Length: 179
Length: 149
Image (cartoon, rainbow over the protein chains, first blue to last red):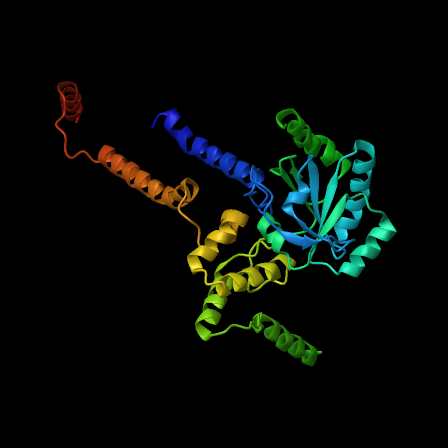
């Protein structure tokens, strides 16, 4: 046998290792595909956490905003709260909260203690809006444009770094493309 | 000491056998059976390898309730799967659809098998080509060797 044919199995093996290594690194198995990018915020009718007034998806349009799914039972939401406050005060970003599967009184107390950088919150006690949004844990944050279209979804804690690197880009993209 | 191990072993066997029970109120047994089938076959989005029936995650509770609601609304099993697929994608289906990716996944082994068979045939062909007549040069060599002897 000549030399090149000896090399073939080695090359095939190396290619396979490269392919599998790449494939394993490529996707975090915990990260779900986002099915609703480019689609409007799903319809809902849920009470405002602080006023009790019924709110719908129509109350969300007008300017781009971050839709943040949070709960008092979610430990990383505490860490995220500081970052959201900073993002709101430093960059003037509008943030709307979805209080997810939570105890309403606990949620109100939490906002009294930690401050409330949100424009308002809707109470999703049964998780219906969360399911329609494809949420599978808290916190999750969506970038939504002025027309109410979902541009981006971030699973996990938002930090100022995440905001600067990705969320801000999507919010800015909106002001260029939108009205 | 040995008694402790026996007790621990027994406790563990109880844990291993414990199947999550999701009591549900349904108007009839058919709906109830469909409910249990669906939550057994759909995957919990929060967990890597647990179905909706077996998960305590918040989202699994929400989705079990969603399945129940949709069943009561009279939706078919296919409609319920589609409803969840539209929101959670392929991840939620334990019985995946046929997509280019799944074709690749199922097809590649057969492709390799065919490739292997082909290579095997080629090697066999090359190594055994039957008795072959000597060419004139080889005949000369053979003659020389025989003459020497």
